[in-house]
Image (cartoon, rainbow, N blue to C red; front, side, top):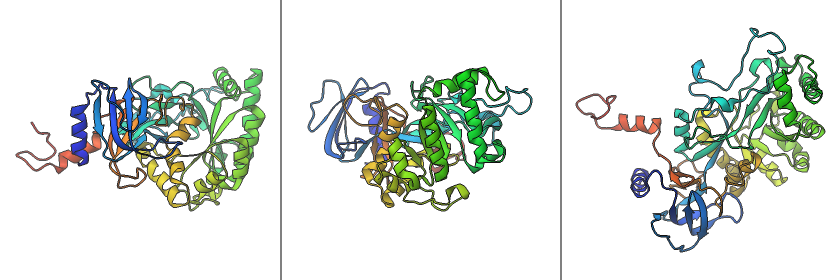
Length: 423
């Protein structure tokens, strides 16, 4: 059955409000142990996975979908993105990921603003969300932009669900984002050593409550909360800088996450010992700057062999291409990472890192039924596409602005030019 015919069949079989269904004869990839389950059924009731097994009995009134051996995975993580807070990069009014107060506000208010929270600008109706959701992405972590307001402390963001809800932020997932390394040197007196000096000053202000001109009163409160065991995502590549992050986090009781980590493989034993996860860009190979001279396509595989928890996120502006994260995971497999670990890197591992693992990231009894049925055996293969996405058991629309444009301009020419919708 073609992708379009299957989507139509599912749309007929499952009303938009449905939360109960039985998916039969699927190759189930749970996203974690126990590995692949061939020819298994998955029963969803009330939006939650209630049973996984062979030849499950169908409760009365529950719609059935025959997967015919296709792969079924958890909904995918989109990485650290601006989905819902960035629409068109060239249109300032649609970009809410960056804070730039400039010089119009007197000090100290123009200094660091860790209290900047991009969750407040999230728009669940963003066109970019639909484009990524039809390819299996059901959640992402909002990441504020780099160096807002002349600071390398970018602000806060949470994991958000991409199912159209307005209250999309997942409680307990909020993180503080800090950008370190050579790229942030202009914001720390021209030296990366200045970054640690300023961070120590921020810690001192947060702990004493006394202002030295770096943080606002609100900012001191935010920093104090993270010093009580909060999650901080450090965008950093150089191995030496990663070791500084580990020492700083241990000293001040932070829960660090490394994003980027181009040279993380060089300090894999230290990352393992500290139980610090890394969000890897699996396509980082040739160095783009002096912080990433040790880049290698084997980064994820080497970290995994050392016992480091590995997830994936793209470098740069990944907002509109979050759907390509599974391709990065596939490239990591091509360079030595076990397939199951690669899938976990875009499902269960990021869910664990950002506090969603109690409900999402796996196909398991009791988990929310965020599921993706794929057209082929290997969801990490670029020629395989998402046939249907379910979010909490509800079938997501498999149409986006891109599919609408495709269908419009591939349609046969009629009395009016193709740009005109059919009447």
